[in-house]
Length: 73
Figure 1 (cartoon, one colour):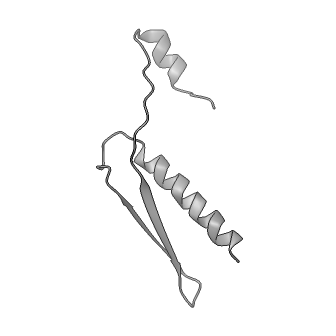
Figure 2 (cartoon, rainbow, N blue to C red):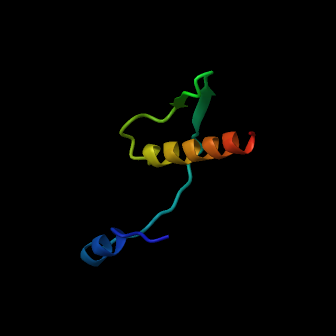
């Protein structure tokens, strides 16, 4: 993994790094109708704008859901 913005910030600032994990989830439901149209629904308890990388989590769950759906065919 490459953190493109980390060296720039670290070279100009000082401080410490603290890694933590959170116990929150993003849920995704996918439906495919008779016309093969896909409907996706997301839900989570995390608030919008929380800075918890919700967009990244949504992309991961979407990718996982599509892989599972493809493998079930």
